[in-house]
Image 1 (cartoon, rainbow, N blue to C red):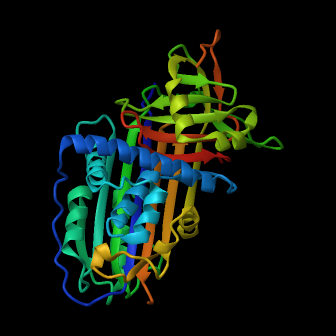
Image 2 (cartoon, helix red, strand yellow):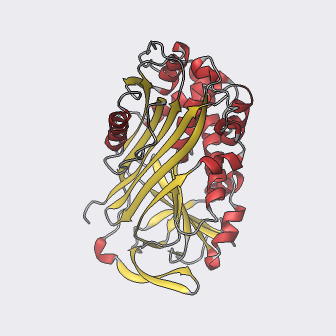
Image 3 (cartoon, rainbow, N blue to C red):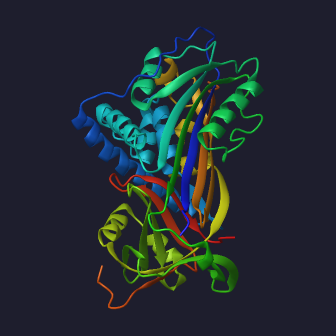
Length: 419
């Protein structure tokens, strides 16, 4: 059987800051994440839990939207964690409540440093890396300790740009970085006009994954079959099949759903597919929680299962400002915002957050990309089955790409229409 490639996920987050003083800024080189291993280990668990809770909260905001959903909670959380490091007062409190950031600085920073190292570890059987970068207006004064902190714990490299006199060139430079980090899957993340002469800082995060299925699909077994977008809206889509005697996967089911785990080469990462029974995605979404997800994952056990999964390909783009306000952090988007940890003054606020994503699942595997932009401006003031079960994903389902050891959710989405 020919080798099948699985590529999952690229994402970038961008924070754009407007306005401020016109004085020199000393840029610190990025430092190697450091700290006590116990703190890093404990922090990693806390950061993963925070990221996953935010993932499900954000999904709950998007579940009512028509159509497919796909985003990277890890990218959004990481970039906004770097932003949070500069937040103070009620601004910081609201951000912490939305993202569940550990309030203990050592735990939070050690956790992000540890997760960065885990994602970027060497000698893997797949490609997975994450990168952070900061782009600073060359004539603007930031606090040296802020850049040093982001460099030390988030490996955020700083580059000077001339936003004031050549905003368009700066936009192209940043978008090119995003394209490079996402294997050219996310283009023009920052639209024209978003960066202008008032821009002072851009923070970016990107994550990329490419791997192979451990047990691969044969293209010859893919056939056109019915997919029920709704009970009354049935379309023909290519459905991939794996029903041979080697089709042994992590699987479980209960009265509500079937869960399938598809591992990637190296078995450090996997895709979880949550398939509601009776085409009842709404009930599944309403019951989805960290506790439920953990319970369902514990019930998984290796067994024979005949699986049928559609090929799907789609793009998403979210303007997240209103969503994050509704989730509980409105002050960060107002003139009352306090990001004085970046500049020493209350002169910055977030104007928007943009997230763009792409996913393509086929016989060669899955390719996915996502990018996020946060824009900131100057303020104005398990029971075993007796027979082989069948996992037939011929109606809407949820899927999650996660790290197996940590449980960290890298990507999450739902398929409503595979076309």
